[in-house]
Length: 340
Image: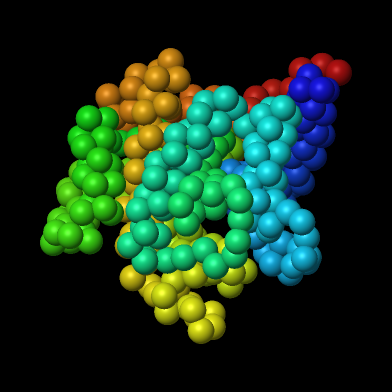
C-alpha cells in the first residue's frame, strides 16, 4: 500500500513537472512580466505544499465545527485525534512527508502538549467540549496543531532549499529556545522575561538572511522578517480555530472575538522553538556544511546551474558584455559570404 501511494505521488509530481515545463516556455515567449508571474505562482504552490499538514488540520477544525453531528457516539475532539493520525500515516505512505519531518512533528507534539496541560490548568484557555482521548483538560488533537508549525518549517526548508547568511551557532539558538520554553511556564510565578527574549532574538538573528530557491534563482530576505510573517499567519489560523470552537480564551467565553494581537508575540517565540528543532534535524541531514558554517556573499553562487532562460529574464548584461556582443554581430554582418 505504501509503495502504491509513493508511485501515485511520483506520477503526480511528474505531471506537475511537465505542466511546469510548458509554463516555462510560455513565460519565455511573453517577457519578464510572465517570468515574474510564473515564479510567483511557483512560490504559492510551494507554500501550499509546505502548509499541507496545517491546512488539512485547519480544514478538519472548520469542517467538524460546521457538519459534525452533535449527538455522535464519538466526540468531535476524539474524531479530530483519529483524523490527524490518519492524515499523518497517509502523508508518510504517499511520500509527501519524510520520516525526518514526521520526527519533528512528533517532537513538537510532545513539547506542545506538555505546555498545553500546564496552560489549561492555569486558566490561560480552555477546551469546552467533552472527549475521552485527553490528558487532564487537553484533548490530544491539540498537539497536532503545534506540530503543524514544525511540519510547515520542515517542509518549507526542503522545498525552498534554505541557505543562510550569518546564521548564529546552533548551540546559541538552542539556549534561546530553552529560555523561551521555560518562560512560558515561569511567567505565571516570576516576572515575565518576554521582552528580554525578544531582544535576544533580535541580537542573534538581526544580521541573518535566509536564501530560498523558488526555481533556479535564490531570493533572500531577513530571517527575522520571515519569523514575523510566519507568526502572523499562525495568529490568523488561531482566529479561525477559535471561531470553530476548537478552544476558547477567557475573553471568548460569552461569544467569539478576535484573538488579541498581543498573542502574535507569543506565537513568534513559540515558532522560534519549532525553528530551532527543525534546524537541528536539517543540520544532521544535510551533507553540505552546517547551517551558519560559511557566509555567502552572493546568492547566485549557491546554485551554479542557472538556466539561460532565468538569467536572461532577471539579469541585464553588463555594459562591456553588451558592447562585445554588438561588435561580434557587426563583424559577422561585414564578413564576406561564402559561395552557395
